[in-house]
Length: 383
Image (cartoon, rainbow, N blue to C red; front, side):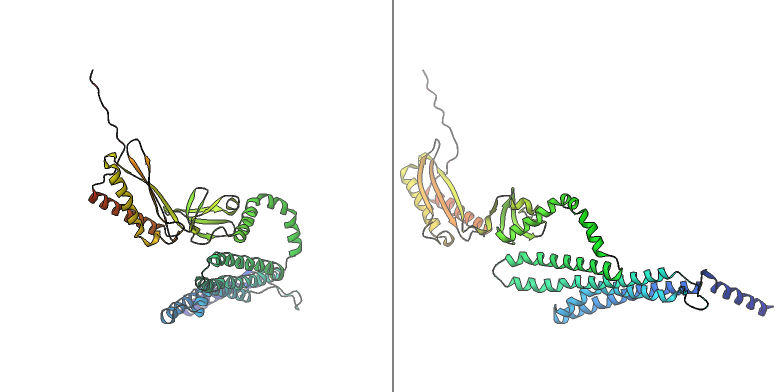
């Protein structure tokens, strides 16, 4: 009795396994297809993890090298490549029709088989293009190191543009190759069709085109470089990046401002970072009670303070200027002007201002010279 039950169960299992879900293909073939897909995905993750781990260990021992950078860049494309291989192998798990056989072999349509192979090759081509796309990071790393050794910062601006140009070029070539050679579509007719709507696209993208030519103007005219302080349309701060469409400026408050290049090309750009010096002009006011003796002494003190600061005396054509120049309504006015160098050291300039102010206060207090502030004296006359 038990033997008969086992025979019946084995027969049912054989019938279930051999059950033709699609003509010519049994259930076990689709189960095998699923297993190949799962193994492909899992294998891709394992390879990706192994490449990243080896690259990290290599960087700990030898620092950043070409090999470690390439392994990190190729980890994700390797995952896509393994998936493409698994997808192609899935085709071998199924039976496709063969009308030329005697008798004709039933199975899945040949058109599906051809399309399956093309899609697998397309995924493989995408993996190769993705790998080349990511390897641009290696070139960028060494370009940044090379540009960091040069004095000019113009090449620092060119590195992001070169990176984006290479990536856009790789993407365009990959799309054309896949469409023409893998998917075997007529690229010329597609491009001609695209040309018909090119005018409409150009009209819709006129701002983008204007920004692109604005970026060309910026690189040709070079109104600023990376990290230079500029003022554009009321925004003040250092330049962080110049791209095809826009330029990024970091304000002194920490905000990131993105300005379209077309606006920059048609705006007044004040390059503060290229000034030769920073000028300070102040009016020092002392009380009328000081008299001419203390007024003259105040001028001498200020000249002595400014003469002892090297950053203010680097150019004989622009020495510090101090004059008793005006009788105000409520004070005696001493004009003070000096030029601080270098012109791109804003915080050094503020430090010198503080030094001048504190020393002036100390010396004035020692001499009994009082600073003036707006006051009025009212005299009442009795009849």
